[in-house]
Amino acid sequence: MWWYTGFAIIAIPLAAGCLWLVGERGRLILPATRRTFRSQGLRRALRLQTWHLYVYGCWPRVYIGALIHGLFRFLAVSPVPGRHFLSNHYHGKVLTPEHARSLVTVEKPIRLRDLEQVIPYPVARLLLLDTPLDMAVYECPCRLTRAVPCQPTQVCMIMGQPFVDLLLEHHPRTSRRLARDEALELLAAEHRRGHVHVAWFKDACFDRFFAICNCCRCCCGGIDAMLHHGIPMIASSGFVAAVAADRCRGCGACAAVCPFGAVSVNGQATVDGLRCMGCGVCVDQCRSDAIRLVRDETRGVPLDVQLLELSPPRAGLG
Image (cartoon, rainbow, N blue to C red; front, side, top):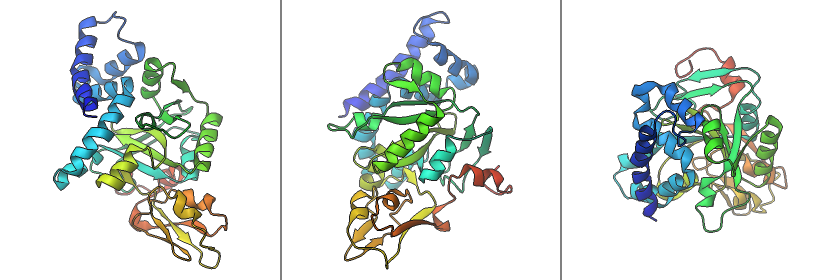
Protein backbone atom coordinates (compact mmCIF):
# COMPACT_ATOMS: atom_id res chain seq x y z
CA MET A 1 0.00 0.00 0.00
CA TRP A 2 2.84 2.37 -0.79
CA TRP A 3 0.49 4.60 -2.74
CA TYR A 4 -0.60 5.99 0.64
CA THR A 5 2.89 7.32 1.23
CA GLY A 6 3.20 8.64 -2.30
CA PHE A 7 -0.10 10.46 -2.06
CA ALA A 8 0.89 12.06 1.26
CA ILE A 9 4.20 13.24 -0.21
CA ILE A 10 2.43 14.82 -3.17
CA ALA A 11 -0.45 16.25 -1.10
CA ILE A 12 1.71 18.49 1.08
CA PRO A 13 3.21 20.70 -1.66
CA LEU A 14 -0.02 20.53 -3.67
CA ALA A 15 -2.10 21.76 -0.73
CA ALA A 16 0.45 24.45 0.04
CA GLY A 17 0.43 25.70 -3.52
CA CYS A 18 -3.36 25.78 -3.70
CA LEU A 19 -3.71 27.79 -0.51
CA TRP A 20 -1.06 30.37 -1.37
CA LEU A 21 -2.16 30.76 -5.00
CA VAL A 22 -5.86 31.13 -4.29
CA GLY A 23 -5.29 34.02 -1.89
CA GLU A 24 -7.19 35.65 0.94
CA ARG A 25 -10.66 35.53 -0.65
CA GLY A 26 -10.34 32.17 -2.31
CA ARG A 27 -13.06 29.65 -1.55
CA LEU A 28 -10.56 26.86 -1.06
CA ILE A 29 -9.41 28.48 2.17
CA LEU A 30 -11.99 27.60 4.80
CA PRO A 31 -12.33 29.93 7.80
CA ALA A 32 -10.83 27.51 10.34
CA THR A 33 -7.87 26.86 8.05
CA ARG A 34 -7.27 30.59 7.68
CA ARG A 35 -7.46 31.11 11.45
CA THR A 36 -5.05 28.26 12.05
CA PHE A 37 -2.38 29.63 9.73
CA ARG A 38 -2.88 33.22 10.87
CA SER A 39 -2.47 32.21 14.51
CA GLN A 40 0.97 30.88 13.69
CA GLY A 41 2.25 34.02 11.99
CA LEU A 42 3.98 33.97 8.63
CA ARG A 43 7.21 32.37 9.82
CA ARG A 44 5.60 29.51 11.75
CA ALA A 45 2.89 29.07 9.10
CA LEU A 46 5.59 28.08 6.60
CA ARG A 47 6.92 25.31 8.83
CA LEU A 48 6.51 21.72 7.70
CA GLN A 49 4.78 20.94 11.02
CA THR A 50 1.97 23.39 10.31
CA TRP A 51 1.36 21.93 6.85
CA HIS A 52 1.58 18.51 8.45
CA LEU A 53 -1.35 19.46 10.68
CA TYR A 54 -3.30 20.66 7.66
CA VAL A 55 -2.70 17.42 5.74
CA TYR A 56 -3.71 15.37 8.76
CA GLY A 57 -6.90 17.40 9.20
CA CYS A 58 -7.86 17.14 5.52
CA TRP A 59 -6.93 13.50 4.81
CA PRO A 60 -6.71 11.60 8.12
CA ARG A 61 -7.52 8.22 6.56
CA VAL A 62 -4.84 8.57 3.89
CA TYR A 63 -2.36 9.95 6.40
CA ILE A 64 -2.85 7.14 8.94
CA GLY A 65 -2.96 4.56 6.15
CA ALA A 66 0.48 5.72 5.00
CA LEU A 67 1.81 5.18 8.52
CA ILE A 68 0.24 1.77 9.07
CA HIS A 69 0.88 0.26 5.65
CA GLY A 70 4.10 2.06 4.79
CA LEU A 71 6.17 3.97 7.34
CA PHE A 72 5.73 1.59 10.28
CA ARG A 73 6.89 -1.36 8.21
CA PHE A 74 9.84 0.61 6.89
CA LEU A 75 10.93 1.74 10.36
CA ALA A 76 10.61 -1.80 11.67
CA VAL A 77 13.53 -2.91 9.48
CA SER A 78 15.53 0.31 9.75
CA PRO A 79 18.30 0.90 12.31
CA VAL A 80 17.15 1.18 15.94
CA PRO A 81 17.24 5.03 16.03
CA GLY A 82 14.74 5.04 13.17
CA ARG A 83 12.24 3.12 15.26
CA HIS A 84 12.22 5.86 17.86
CA PHE A 85 12.12 8.80 15.48
CA LEU A 86 8.36 8.67 14.92
CA SER A 87 7.44 7.99 18.54
CA ASN A 88 9.57 10.94 19.64
CA HIS A 89 7.24 13.23 17.67
CA TYR A 90 3.93 11.39 17.71
CA HIS A 91 2.92 9.33 20.71
CA GLY A 92 0.13 8.37 23.06
CA LYS A 93 -0.43 7.93 26.79
CA VAL A 94 -2.75 5.15 28.01
CA LEU A 95 -5.53 6.43 30.25
CA THR A 96 -7.50 4.57 32.87
CA PRO A 97 -11.27 5.04 32.45
CA GLU A 98 -11.29 7.43 35.42
CA HIS A 99 -8.54 9.63 34.00
CA ALA A 100 -10.16 9.68 30.57
CA ARG A 101 -13.35 10.98 32.15
CA SER A 102 -11.42 13.61 34.08
CA LEU A 103 -9.98 15.04 30.86
CA VAL A 104 -13.40 15.74 29.41
CA THR A 105 -14.95 17.10 32.61
CA VAL A 106 -12.43 19.77 33.62
CA GLU A 107 -14.06 22.68 35.43
CA LYS A 108 -11.43 25.36 34.84
CA PRO A 109 -8.71 26.10 32.29
CA ILE A 110 -5.62 23.95 32.73
CA ARG A 111 -2.18 24.52 31.25
CA LEU A 112 0.66 22.15 32.12
CA ARG A 113 4.01 22.20 30.33
CA ASP A 114 6.96 19.83 29.90
CA LEU A 115 5.36 16.64 31.16
CA GLU A 116 8.55 14.54 31.13
CA GLN A 117 7.34 12.33 33.96
CA VAL A 118 4.01 11.74 32.22
CA ILE A 119 5.05 11.39 28.58
CA PRO A 120 8.64 10.06 28.47
CA TYR A 121 9.60 11.38 25.04
CA PRO A 122 12.21 14.04 24.14
CA VAL A 123 9.80 16.54 22.59
CA ALA A 124 7.97 19.53 24.08
CA ARG A 125 4.56 18.71 25.49
CA LEU A 126 1.68 20.91 26.51
CA LEU A 127 -1.55 19.90 28.18
CA LEU A 128 -3.94 22.73 27.42
CA LEU A 129 -7.59 22.40 28.33
CA ASP A 130 -10.07 25.24 28.08
CA THR A 131 -13.44 25.48 29.80
CA PRO A 132 -15.89 24.82 28.30
CA LEU A 133 -13.78 22.34 26.35
CA ASP A 134 -14.41 22.15 22.60
CA MET A 135 -14.74 18.53 21.51
CA ALA A 136 -15.67 16.71 18.33
CA VAL A 137 -15.90 13.07 17.33
CA TYR A 138 -14.92 11.71 13.92
CA GLU A 139 -14.38 8.48 12.03
CA CYS A 140 -11.37 6.54 13.30
CA PRO A 141 -8.82 6.58 10.45
CA CYS A 142 -7.08 3.50 11.85
CA ARG A 143 -10.27 1.43 11.65
CA LEU A 144 -11.15 2.73 8.21
CA THR A 145 -7.83 1.54 6.77
CA ARG A 146 -8.67 -2.07 7.72
CA ALA A 147 -10.49 -4.47 5.43
CA VAL A 148 -12.91 -5.43 8.22
CA PRO A 149 -12.88 -2.58 10.75
CA CYS A 150 -14.16 -2.85 14.30
CA GLN A 151 -17.48 -1.13 14.91
CA PRO A 152 -18.47 1.55 15.55
CA THR A 153 -16.00 3.67 13.62
CA GLN A 154 -16.96 7.15 14.86
CA VAL A 155 -15.00 6.96 18.11
CA CYS A 156 -12.01 9.34 17.86
CA MET A 157 -12.36 12.46 20.00
CA ILE A 158 -10.56 15.63 18.94
CA MET A 159 -9.92 18.17 21.69
CA GLY A 160 -9.57 21.94 21.64
CA GLN A 161 -9.00 24.62 19.05
CA PRO A 162 -8.01 25.00 16.26
CA PHE A 163 -8.31 21.25 15.75
CA VAL A 164 -12.06 20.94 16.35
CA ASP A 165 -13.09 23.61 13.82
CA LEU A 166 -10.52 22.43 11.29
CA LEU A 167 -11.88 18.88 11.43
CA LEU A 168 -15.56 19.89 11.38
CA GLU A 169 -15.11 22.15 8.36
CA HIS A 170 -13.23 19.59 6.29
CA HIS A 171 -15.34 16.58 7.32
CA PRO A 172 -18.88 17.85 7.93
CA ARG A 173 -20.50 14.51 7.02
CA THR A 174 -18.31 12.24 9.13
CA SER A 175 -17.66 14.38 12.21
CA ARG A 176 -19.78 16.27 14.69
CA ARG A 177 -19.40 18.45 17.75
CA LEU A 178 -19.52 16.52 21.01
CA ALA A 179 -21.20 17.60 24.24
CA ARG A 180 -19.72 16.58 27.59
CA ASP A 181 -22.45 14.01 28.36
CA GLU A 182 -22.02 12.47 24.91
CA ALA A 183 -18.25 12.28 25.40
CA LEU A 184 -18.68 10.47 28.72
CA GLU A 185 -21.11 7.98 27.20
CA LEU A 186 -18.77 7.37 24.28
CA LEU A 187 -15.89 6.62 26.68
CA ALA A 188 -18.08 4.27 28.74
CA ALA A 189 -19.35 2.41 25.68
CA GLU A 190 -15.85 1.93 24.27
CA HIS A 191 -14.57 0.69 27.63
CA ARG A 192 -17.37 -1.87 27.74
CA ARG A 193 -16.23 -3.08 24.31
CA GLY A 194 -12.75 -3.68 25.69
CA HIS A 195 -11.10 -0.75 23.92
CA VAL A 196 -8.28 1.40 25.29
CA HIS A 197 -8.43 5.14 25.95
CA VAL A 198 -5.24 6.83 24.70
CA ALA A 199 -4.38 10.54 24.88
CA TRP A 200 -2.33 11.54 21.84
CA PHE A 201 0.38 14.18 21.66
CA LYS A 202 1.87 15.40 18.39
CA ASP A 203 4.57 17.99 17.74
CA ALA A 204 2.87 18.97 14.49
CA CYS A 205 -0.19 19.90 16.56
CA PHE A 206 1.43 22.84 18.32
CA ASP A 207 3.35 20.50 20.66
CA ARG A 208 0.29 19.62 22.70
CA PHE A 209 -2.35 17.09 23.63
CA PHE A 210 -4.98 17.01 20.89
CA ALA A 211 -7.07 13.83 20.97
CA ILE A 212 -8.44 10.90 22.92
CA CYS A 213 -8.62 7.81 20.77
CA ASN A 214 -10.53 4.69 21.81
CA CYS A 215 -8.21 2.04 20.46
CA CYS A 216 -8.82 -1.61 19.63
CA ARG A 217 -5.85 -3.94 19.31
CA CYS A 218 -6.86 -5.21 15.86
CA CYS A 219 -7.10 -1.78 14.18
CA CYS A 220 -5.09 0.77 16.16
CA GLY A 221 -1.96 1.90 14.34
CA GLY A 222 -0.17 2.82 17.57
CA ILE A 223 -0.77 -0.55 19.22
CA ASP A 224 0.16 -2.33 15.98
CA ALA A 225 3.40 -0.34 15.71
CA MET A 226 4.33 -1.19 19.29
CA LEU A 227 3.42 -4.90 19.31
CA HIS A 228 4.44 -5.92 15.79
CA HIS A 229 7.09 -3.43 14.68
CA GLY A 230 8.92 -2.56 17.90
CA ILE A 231 8.06 1.16 17.66
CA PRO A 232 7.30 2.51 21.18
CA MET A 233 4.34 4.69 20.22
CA ILE A 234 2.41 4.35 23.49
CA ALA A 235 3.39 5.07 27.09
CA SER A 236 2.02 3.22 30.10
CA SER A 237 -0.75 4.74 32.21
CA GLY A 238 1.51 4.40 35.26
CA PHE A 239 -0.46 1.41 36.54
CA VAL A 240 -0.22 -2.36 36.11
CA ALA A 241 -2.84 -5.06 36.59
CA ALA A 242 -2.53 -7.21 39.70
CA VAL A 243 -4.31 -10.57 40.11
CA ALA A 244 -5.70 -11.79 43.44
CA ALA A 245 -4.73 -15.47 43.50
CA ASP A 246 -7.48 -16.43 45.94
CA ARG A 247 -10.19 -15.09 43.61
CA CYS A 248 -8.89 -16.02 40.17
CA ARG A 249 -10.68 -18.99 38.57
CA GLY A 250 -8.37 -19.26 35.59
CA CYS A 251 -11.21 -18.71 33.11
CA GLY A 252 -8.99 -16.84 30.63
CA ALA A 253 -11.39 -13.94 30.04
CA CYS A 254 -8.68 -11.41 30.95
CA ALA A 255 -6.14 -12.92 28.54
CA ALA A 256 -8.72 -12.88 25.75
CA VAL A 257 -9.40 -9.15 26.08
CA CYS A 258 -5.93 -7.80 26.97
CA PRO A 259 -4.99 -5.43 24.11
CA PHE A 260 -1.26 -5.78 24.77
CA GLY A 261 -0.92 -9.55 25.22
CA ALA A 262 0.24 -9.07 28.80
CA VAL A 263 -1.91 -11.76 30.45
CA SER A 264 -1.39 -15.51 30.29
CA VAL A 265 -3.39 -18.25 31.99
CA ASN A 266 -2.06 -21.58 33.22
CA GLY A 267 -4.50 -22.60 35.90
CA GLN A 268 -4.34 -19.00 37.08
CA ALA A 269 -3.89 -15.65 35.38
CA THR A 270 -0.48 -13.98 35.51
CA VAL A 271 0.43 -10.52 34.25
CA ASP A 272 3.66 -9.58 32.47
CA GLY A 273 4.39 -6.24 34.12
CA LEU A 274 6.59 -5.08 31.25
CA ARG A 275 3.91 -5.64 28.63
CA CYS A 276 0.98 -4.41 30.72
CA MET A 277 0.14 -0.78 29.91
CA GLY A 278 -2.35 -0.31 32.73
CA CYS A 279 -5.43 0.34 30.60
CA GLY A 280 -7.88 -1.39 32.97
CA VAL A 281 -9.72 -3.33 30.27
CA CYS A 282 -9.18 -6.63 32.09
CA VAL A 283 -10.46 -5.24 35.39
CA ASP A 284 -14.07 -4.84 34.30
CA GLN A 285 -13.99 -7.91 32.07
CA CYS A 286 -13.02 -10.22 34.97
CA ARG A 287 -16.06 -12.19 36.13
CA SER A 288 -14.43 -13.02 39.47
CA ASP A 289 -13.45 -9.48 40.42
CA ALA A 290 -9.91 -10.78 40.80
CA ILE A 291 -8.00 -7.99 39.04
CA ARG A 292 -7.28 -4.42 40.02
CA LEU A 293 -4.91 -1.70 38.88
CA VAL A 294 -2.00 -0.76 41.14
CA ARG A 295 0.49 2.08 40.78
CA ASP A 296 3.89 1.22 39.38
CA GLU A 297 6.21 4.19 39.79
CA THR A 298 8.66 2.72 37.28
CA ARG A 299 6.06 3.18 34.52
CA GLY A 300 5.67 6.95 34.77
CA VAL A 301 3.17 9.36 36.31
CA PRO A 302 -0.52 8.92 35.44
CA LEU A 303 -2.18 11.57 33.29
CA ASP A 304 -4.45 12.56 36.16
CA VAL A 305 -5.42 16.21 35.65
CA GLN A 306 -6.34 16.79 39.30
CA LEU A 307 -3.18 15.12 40.61
CA LEU A 308 -0.89 17.03 38.26
CA GLU A 309 -2.60 20.34 38.92
CA LEU A 310 -2.41 19.97 42.70
CA SER A 311 1.16 18.64 42.77
CA PRO A 312 3.84 21.14 43.86
CA PRO A 313 6.17 22.44 41.12
CA ARG A 314 8.92 20.02 40.27
CA ALA A 315 11.08 18.96 37.37
CA GLY A 316 8.84 18.05 34.48
CA LEU A 317 5.77 19.89 35.69
CA GLY A 318 5.58 23.61 35.09
